[in-house]
Amino acid sequence: MIPLFKPSSAGTLPADVAKELIAGTKIGDVDFRKALVKGGENAVAESTDPLIVLARKLDPEARERRQWTETHLTSVQSAAVEKIGKARLRFTEKILIRMRPSRSDCRMER
Image (cartoon, rainbow, N blue to C red):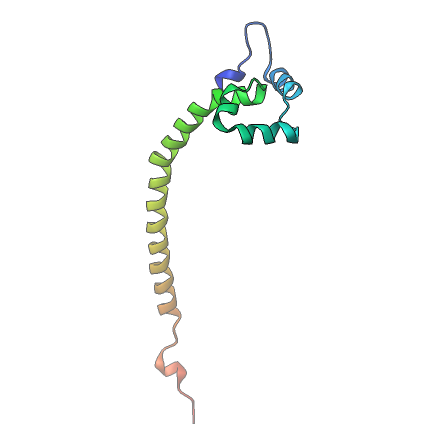
């Protein structure tokens, strides 16, 4: 569980935190989003909107986890996919060779 959403000592549950975030956000307002886009990074950095604040808190850990995943999983997975593809090709070739009719099977009887 993400530390930000663990129940606090006051007994606040993640569902309650989520309700507060949704109730307090203006992210559903088109004009608010346009202002964020127009203001760029500074507008996002200075925003007090609860969902923007949460996103800023989560961003560093999310980036770190993504980097770890790309480094430790994606590269290994890509190598494995290539090996599996080559093995499937060899296997399929062997099956097709076995299934190929012999020359005697192809001759027409007179």
